[in-house]
Length: 138
Ligand SMILES: [Zn+2]
Image (cartoon, rainbow, N blue to C red; front, side, top):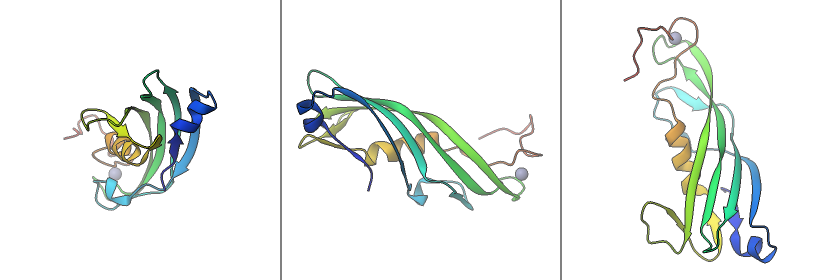
């Protein structure tokens, strides 16, 4: 269900760079905070660039909203999370540091999953009393 990039077709059409904008429902299991859920789809704005050797650079941003009980006082709260996402895809890669793709098509599933996990806060705290200066994130 995650969007894909057809690198072969993009190459054939000489679209070596471009922008992708889409929203997707993220897996609730990506949230490590109790009593918190996504209250919006994850919005992705990505820029891709296909390099000479068919590796593909992805940069962009993700945004989503979390809703649930404040991790400190349990009051219902909501928080918008935004951040950068970037990845590097190698054609037929060996599964090292980079993402790999085969058959000329990049599946963004794993990349989006990792990016959401990376942006996920450790806690959801309400903005009124719980964002106190003495409150330390663990
Ligand atoms: Zn609170």
